[in-house]
Amino acid sequence: MKIRRRSQGQLNKGDEIEVKRPNGSYYAATVLRPPSAVQKNMVFVEYKTVYEGPKCVRGFVDLTHVRPPPPLELGRCFKIGDSVDAYWENGWRKGVVRDLLENSKFVVGFDGNGEKEDEESEVDQCNLRLHREWEDGSWVPSQNELAKAPKENGDKSRKVKLKIVFRRRPANGNFQKDEEVEVTGDEEGFKGSWYSAAVVEYCGNDTYLVEYSAIRTEDGVPLRQEAKAQHIRPRPPELSPVASFRPREVVEVWHNDGWWIGVITAVLTGSKYVVYFSLTHEELEVDHSNLRIHQDWKNGKWIIASEERLGQLMTNSNKLLLKTDVEEKRFEAKFPKGMPVEVRSDEPGYEGSWFSAVIVDSLGKDKYLVEYLTLKTEDLGSFLREEAYASYIRPLPPNARCASRYELLEHVDAWYNDGWWTGRIIKVLTGWRYSVYFRTTNEVMEFKHDDLRRHREWINGKWVIASKETI
Image (tube, rainbow, N blue to C red):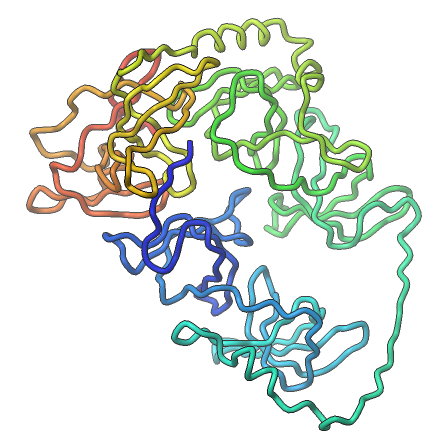
């Protein structure tokens, strides 16, 4: 489900930005939630190249650490002494060109800032850009200043030696050094799983040495292992995130440091699913954030899993076929027209939130048209209407306001940004106020008693109060 909101301040949702992190480097990010009236100087972002496990890191950052990406300059030449930004360890780090090498490479020096020794590294020209500062809403130096800058040696032409190097791919070699790949194994208990790795070198005989990203040796260093080309595939392309999965969909589950192929057998509340693994005949309850669409690498192309693939996974399990049939029927929820409900959002930055709405119409195939009671269209002319699957809809909870104080670690729903957000009491303050932690956004906020309600889950047609051990 997608929720449209009016942008606030100079940043809008979806804006591409760069964020300065404690190490001084800038990292590409996307705005998921612009500054609000409550947090005027903070913006919620998702980094593009900073990862925690399989997921990109998300979090709030101070506006003083945010800037737009610098203007793109293709083919810029650099000379010794130029102040540059080098793409280094997934971010842009400030440095100085110290030497020119062959094949469009440069030696770049990085300041250790007194805490450690200065560093040097060889950097390709494509991973360099001129260093600029973002001051008072503009870049320094500006494009005009760069255009007017005197050229080295005046107008004298310079002789350039062009060296062209042809690299031959090794015989039977399909992958290049440092290429990001995924590797599978045929050991018992690990079939059907893929692990992120990088190619170290080609060993001959259709074999590669790879270094795993998440698997480490007993000494704590990344594991290196030889793997046959038939057990290696490129890293799958990122697909647009899906709001929800349905029974019988083939997915990949992030589990035990790898991606495991399975089939959705049940859709649970709270953005959770039951996934069946045909090779091990096991089932696992999985959070939505740990799933991705399954893709097959065939004849040098990525193909999204088909019905044929589903058939292969399900043929030898009559129990699974029966189970998914039952689950599909079980989740055909019925909501009559005019019924007041709450609708869940899985939009980035809004996970775990519920918004009051009314059922306008049933659209068939487990889908409904709803009209929100607190969200309006961008022109504020009318209440927002959207389509939503039944798995994202629940009846209005019974009156869950609490006359007594909430307890430490108790799960609650907090009224914020026109909706109810699921969180947990982490501090009981004076004056009937509480500090609430939100796991989905990794933030802590303070709320009055009257802006909270007890958290309940809608499970199998009944309201269940969450215990301190759940969620």
